[in-house]
Length: 149
Image (cartoon, rainbow, N blue to C red; front, top):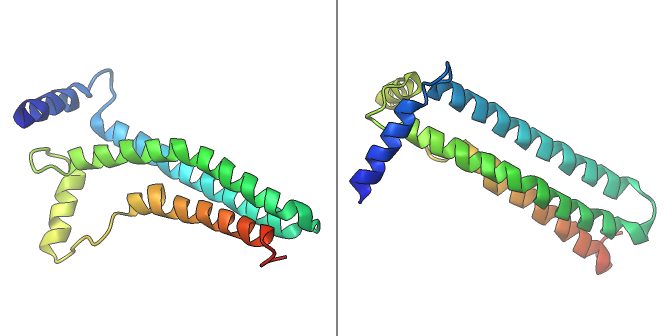
C-alpha cells in the first residue's frame, strides 16, 4: 500500500516538468506565495494592534481586538494551506531518491555538522499565527473583564 503511494507520488513529481514548469518552479512559486501570505498576516496583526491601542474609546477597544482575532483566523486559513503545500513540496524534495540541488545542499550541511532542530515553515504557518490570534483574544478578554484599559 505504502509502496504504491510512493510510486504514484514519484510519477506525479516526474510529470511536473510539463510546459516549461518544473518541480523547482513549483517550489519557488509556493515559497513566494507562502512568505507573501505570512507577511500579509503580520501586517494585518500590526494594524489591529495599532487600532486597538490607538483608539480612545474604551468600549470599542475589546471589539477591535475580538474582530482582529476573527479576521486573523480567516487570514490564517489560506496561510495554513500554503504551509501544507510548501511543507509537502519540501518533504518530496528532500527525499534521498530525488536528485535536487536543495537536497544536495542539505546533505552538505549535514555532513558539516548542521542538525535541524525545528522547521521555520511550521513556525510561520502554525505557531506564530496562533500566538498572534490568541494574543489579540487575550487582550480583548482582559479589556472586557476590566484588567486592561
